[in-house]
Length: 262
Image (tube, rainbow, N blue to C red; front, side, top):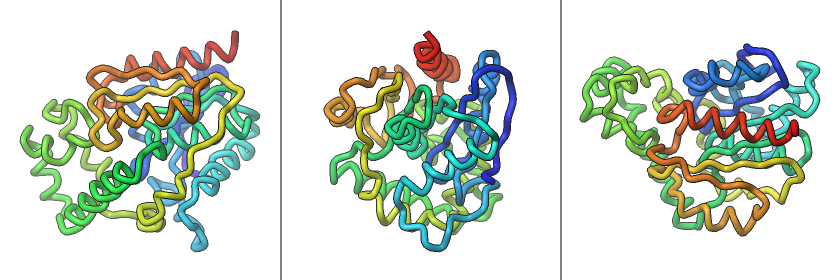
């Protein structure tokens, strides 16, 4: 069973993080969501406290989607709501296309890039990982202690890296600094992150206006592929909007779930 945390009451809502991240990345948003939902934040295979991916893992999204669906089945949950960021956003959209969720909210989802955009994301993540793997944790914490250091390390992920509360993101960066089994496979096979077909459930896409990892120009392709999805540009947010603006992030997720209940 995937590692997960659970809190709140109401209709079940799964939260799915991005590549190399962990379920704690949702912590700023969870208190706002658990007022209306039974919130289940998930560590994907090979991330956080979950077990490594299967040795036969080929980088495809279906393996990860089925892992999240399997957790729902293990918990006795049928068709939860789902929200995801980056890789998790693509997983949420695929779950919506498969009909295994009641609503889906995707935040800066992966997979809608051009070949140039895919190469940019691969180079940025791969390069950052190579650098951080050479650093002891003490050096990482020293760099994060200064605003300039935070800008250098975090500007591709969050819109306001100089703010003091980002000094504690050392744990969030461990997925890049100490990548788990499956990261290299996913990075080498990003072309397997195929975009899903249209869904018959309420679908929301939020994209940070200051996302540098997956720039919001990718919205153009998303609109062509998923014309029924509602798309909102999130002002002042980077690639991980739940860190930059928890209130707006929660508003998008709750609003999408309410539409499904109407």
